[in-house]
Image 1 (spheres, rainbow, N blue to C red):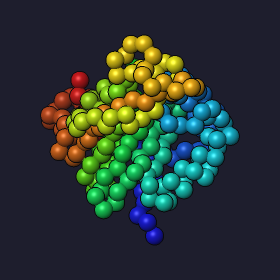
Image 2 (image 1 turned 90 degrees about the horizontal axis):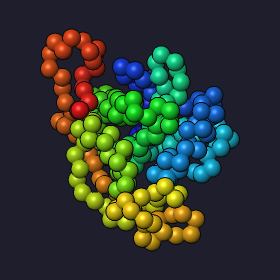
Image 3 (image 1 turned 90 degrees about the vertical axis):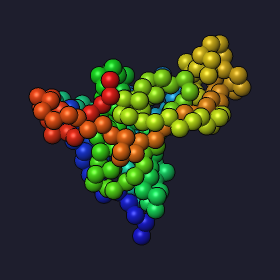
Image 4 (image 1 turned 30 degrees about the vertical axis):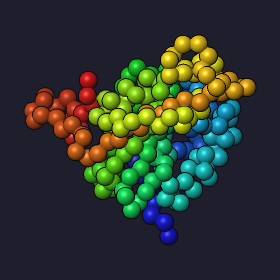
Length: 223
């Protein structure tokens, strides 16, 4: 039997990351209809409520059971509202490495939820699951995703040339001006990916006696 992640929940200062539930379907469908999500991700479009139910009921559990990774809903502690989605994929159990991707709902952007969620997953991977490397791939024009990688302490390792497809007219090329070269019918174009990595030793440990601002959470985000 393939190694796999256990069903789990991860708690951070403001967030609870937990397995998807069928009740998440309406919120997921709304979140994935956002133009930026369509542009920068490879998630199905349109992302319907029916597909969201299938994801929660069948696809995400199969993804975990097969050892490929895990899919977690990100919710607020205070309101239980769905604020995002985190997925681990391309997991290599021999090398103890995996790749993370993340989506944040449009209404929740700018609150620091994405880096908090990713940092929580990284802490769980390194401390509880004995992983040694976490990877992130961000499209060259997706500056918000790059900022998340930087805030958690990720190290940029280089550029994967022409390794991704950007969907939608809001997608940007490397230059950020005009129509991206190579744009195909349907508003798609190829773009570079920036490869980031995070190792256990890259995590920033807070100084003692910081007034309890971070509670019991061991690692902190960079400014």
